[in-house]
Length: 164
Image (tube, rainbow, N blue to C red; front, top):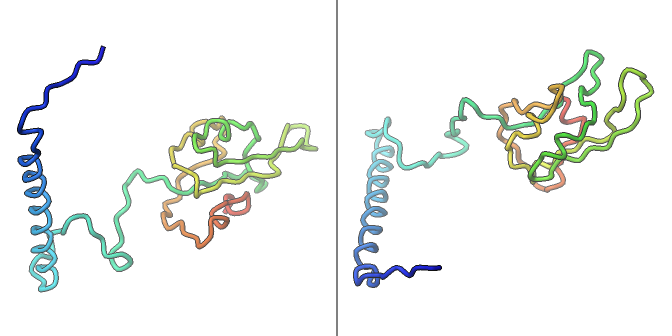
């Protein structure tokens, strides 16, 4: 059963809430204007105005626990450590990992990778793919957050790019 809440006159008019919102927004706006003007004249060097970073001159600091780029780990013979178990592809909520495997001629290794693609335009960086692997074959520990491209097809990383 849905209970309807009675809305009072103050809530129906919204004047008080609108004024409070304008006050908060105006406070932030004018504080940031004063700080930015202080930056121009060199008096407010230690104060930050809002969360504005003047990129590329001022680079945003990375979080100490940042995990950005994926990489495939290598065996001593420089082949990928991945055993093509499809665990990362299965657990990925964004479905951005695509694996194709084939039987290995080596009797010790059951399968090897033919195709391992990660579409970074779809990746949401949860890290489930890293946690799902039983043999530490994939990591997200390269602190490179300048992943840019002029075409979405350039954001699909293959085995070659992931092994670097």
